[in-house]
Image 1 (cartoon, rainbow, N blue to C red):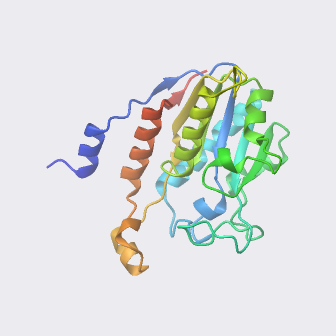
Image 2 (image 1 turned 90 degrees about the horizontal axis):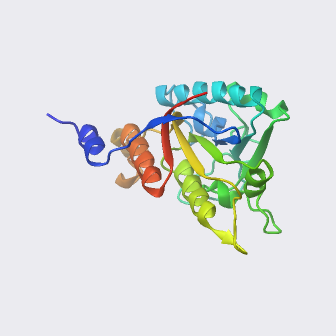
Amino acid sequence: MVSFFEELRARLPVAAREYRPPERTGLLIVDVVNGFCTPGAGPLAPMAPDAQIDAMVAAIATLARDFLSDERPVLALLDTHEPGRPEPPYPPHCERGTGQETLVPALAFLENEPGAKLVEKDVIDGFVGSIRPDGSNVLVEWIRANELESVVVVGICTDICNLDLVSSLLSARNHHLDGRPMLGRLKDVVVYEPGCATYHLPETAVEALGLPGTAHHPQDETHHIGLYVMQARGAVIADALLG
């Protein structure tokens, strides 16, 4: 009997492929913070060690070191909320000063790397969260200042923060201001699948927590759906990075 997940993959195919990043490629890390990745670190953290999340963290740590060794820029978005300022429909999470908003230990080295830039964001979409009070955008400036032709996106969650960011980047790539591309030379928005993950919330946990049935979040299925939608929007889905 074909499982729902197998049928989902057949009906919504994702064509992951090898990708060779051009020289001017940047690494964009999304929300690999304790509050989303470290077991027991907060209301949106996994309740127990999670194989998909652990594999994601290991892949990103290796990738970040490789990018820095090759003198390619790295930018890490950190979900950071002011205490008492909610982000519906989620419970308070990653509030400033709790430690939930800091990079996981495996990526803490980025805090002292001159080639890495850390940017706090207070909303799901890191593109929107990078807007300063004066209307300028940290992420746009980073892409343009480094004359990036490609960005490789990794992080959590595949179907939430990653999806929103990738969709915004693709729209911004196609947007022109005074006849010039908003994101300069950017051509490819690449989602590196081994460096992405999402959370698992089974129906039993939903019932135990008193949440509505719509809160059910099967990890494998939602991860796949996130990849499918990003692919449909025009992102490159990569299962290996060459060179």
